[in-house]
Amino acid sequence: MGAMDHERMENGPPAVLREIIEHKRAEVYEAKARTPLRELEAMCAQAEPPRNFFRAVTRPTPERPTAVIAEVKRRSPSAGLIRPEYDNGFEPERIAERYHAGGAAAISCLTDRKFFGGDLSFIDRIKERVPLPVLRKDFLIDPWQLWESRAHGADAVLLIAECLDEGTLLDMMILAQQLGLTVLVEVHDMENLLRVRPHIGFPHPTYCLLGINNRDLRTMKTDVTHTLRLVDLVDDPGVLVSESGISSPADLARLREVGVNIALVGESLMRQDDPGEALATLLKPA
Image (cartoon, rainbow, N blue to C red; front, side, top):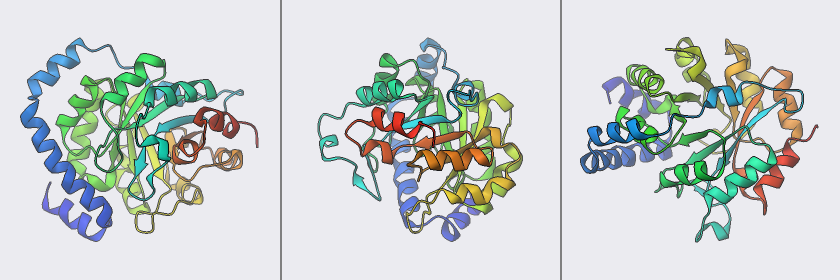
């Protein structure tokens, strides 16, 4: 990571994100020593082709005007364990089945172990049970992790603007497209939105989505109006994903009014006894 990136992190993202990235650097360093790139390349060559995540979420219909990316999330740094029973016997594939039944357009799966209680194996387990494309949600800071993502069945990956300098972001967007992965480029604030906006749709428009995360990384509070405030700065709302803080049909309706037809929803669903039923309720007309 370059000097400019270090400076941006000192002045921008709060301690929690810096801590996660520092841990992730060490984690990736160890993982690369265990699994050389050539091994991942061989795994990718044998893997089934990726499912088309971009297409799955960018085609609203009268019956499903909002495409929901439903998230499998066990814990978070801000909330801790989302439900007590998720401590032991967590079944991501069962949750994904319920999401599929509830009307999800795609699945997002947390794979970070230390901070979110996830695992890369969750992706394969989910894809064995549901036909939906799956996004690997993690802190990707090294191109090696894109090969790792594809080798373990991911159809799409999250790239967080606050974690990446411009050169690394572009390199990873190019490699992701070569691997057939849809990229969700996520921003938390106006500064980073303006920084990445010229690159959305690079290197090919049907492989790139833009996400606005409604969580304030300093207070950890969520507010869906954050997307509403920034949407006018987005060139193509058709590829915009509103993330976090969405919990009601009214929230989805407010987003649709400004042309946002894709939402990523996790914690509000995962807190319920039946996440799939909660999703079906969310998708009912406001």
